[in-house]
Image (tube, rainbow, N blue to C red; front, top):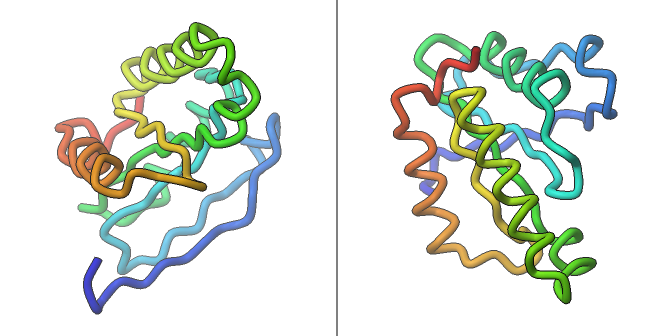
Length: 132
């Protein structure tokens, strides 16, 4: 990721507290990532609201992406493959609605090459900065 990488983690925002969350993004940031859990049902009113707040807090020119951690959900529902596929599709549909391409990855055992390619594609989207 290069010698100039500075990574900061913000506090977790509890479900339903999106209105109280005021994301803080370093004014020098070039990228911001919202991390969600695949176990959560994606909703415009909650995750969408948070993503819009993150976009608004990001400095001009910064790009914003959504990463969805599939680790726990995949572990729990591995035997029910269609359930995992349905939830991943739900996040993709949510992404279409908010103008983002959520990158779904199991963070505990991520395929770094595949995740990097998906993240680069998400950052390259014309709407990566804007979330309605």
